[in-house]
Length: 122
Length: 111
Image (cartoon, rainbow over all chains, first blue to last red; front, side, top):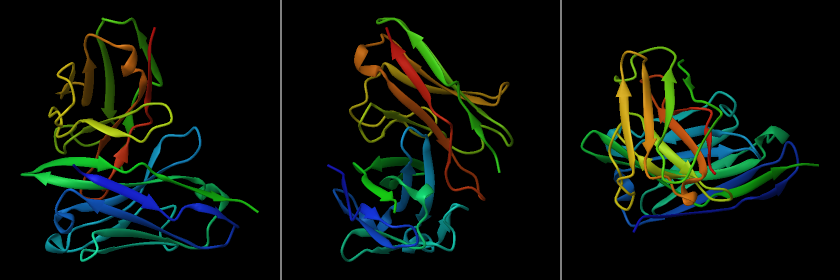
């Protein structure tokens, strides 16, 4: 069974930093493309960024609103995905979900974690 | 960049069939796979359709996905509606420049 468990959320002041983690199990983590997706209260899903598997180049891409402030990384030896967030703004307040994209041939199948809440407020 | 447009809300009665559309603004809907996610109130999203029309294990065959090239759209169809299907549904696709693009979500009410 695929499991993705996020941690590290909490309350942080504007301008502050926070690091989220996502512990993965039940699939070959090193082969998966991992993403962070967020959802502000009452709003739609918003993609934050993605890191490909090392075998596919390990490329990292970010959404425009977070580029230069957020950093995604992965530790395949620990089956863990990270999101380092800095220069946080009130508009970054959201539930942050970790997702894994497992490729079945050329077909992408996504699994989701339960999410962790980040609140940016003074 | 392209956008995916969904209706804000749909409603239907239990036992009926409902279809939710997802229209791509530019580029062919068939050029990249479309995924559909279900998000029940207070819960994380889960995948109900991937690769246009594939169901993950455990998703009932009441859920189906399709593409319509003439309208450049994807559709999620749920038949035999149950009250447990009441949720927000999001479509998602991508291209070489945009790794993940979400639709704005559709609130399904089963009344």
